[in-house]
Length: 87
Image (cartoon, rainbow, N blue to C red):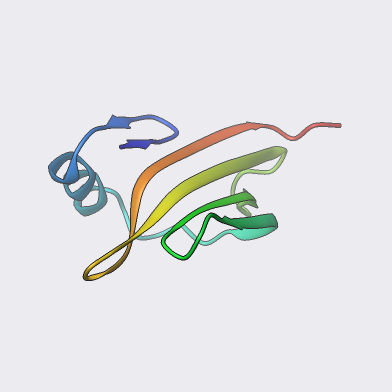
């Protein structure tokens, strides 16, 4: 699952189609207050704030749930949202 700024994606097919269709330009961002929390050796969450030069006055929030699978670490759920920068 990937809940994005303007999309709700369920399953690998929807997520891959979204990534192929979105432009590659303008995705650079500055991360802030990133927190990685582990639960044992095979499960973790990553939370961060982000800002983009082209989105003055806005702050993004992203959370990912990671699980170690036999073939490596995979994101199994994600949320991305943008709000007005708190004062």
